[in-house]
Length: 411
Image (tube, rainbow, N blue to C red):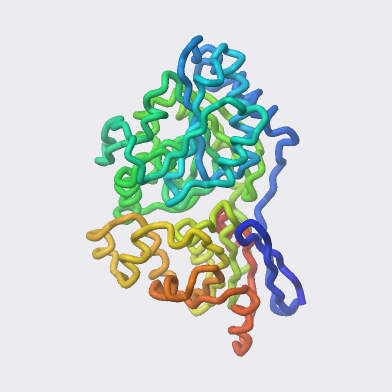
């Protein structure tokens, strides 16, 4: 037997697969992680791309808002925030004029672990920390995109004199790739803004890792421009959240360089014709709720042969994560999902289209009565799920450790 360890919530769990059945394990390419993330970020801030340096943007007495995506790992987030705040303090901006805005637009609840890490960080003492949720009431309307998205973002960020957006450059299953633009939309946005932007994905073709011709990406970047971000900080990471390189500067140009650096790192070769695919969403960065976990299916469904079983590991301690996953659980036609669109509709579409070809067993803390209406079979452990499949004649098994942040392909 081979024990394969996969991320699950804040820990790891293992699955035992007979050696004769294991056809491969798909792991993220680690790249070359920076030995000193904060230093790498400080160097980026000193040499911004097609933008004035942060010290020149921040006039004495100005109020600065530093926004960060609430799904980022605490270590990466505090490294980036410490570098930015240190630079602002050197520019004679007092600590009580600096606000950190944690954008939780992707979550129904705030990320308490991240907030606690920020508040405890030595370099961030005296700096105010605000938490934004998509159901908040203090929004500022920045304008309407060419696709009709009313861009309403967190007022504490919009009303600042200097606005800095920090984002992680990685795979996104709506806009193709995340970055500082995603910190504006969805992280700092309201529910209606996010829903309108996400609804585009049911009208036009989108794919993870693809930004060219991606209408959601175009809408997201247009919204970020409307937010008048003075400096964008893009953190290029591998599939495990380690910093590879940082790029700061203009919202468009800094992202362009970051995307070049990322390249195809998120694409990982996989073996074909597996009968069982065991895939983890990728741990607590993704599996805090089902809405953010199911995109692992979007990564593996294209390589799953018809009739294969997908075992999805996603703890989901915060529940479903979007109203549409319960309200639309019985809808299986694209036209009806478009007509009744709400957050979660595209996730339902993904689940239903996957289930037409493959059985999906969900390994989760979610009660069965919540997940089963969507069509999932629910087990409490991955090994229980595999035991359920013991009677199958064909059991060629592929293991994918980070389904939300990598894209397996058959070469």
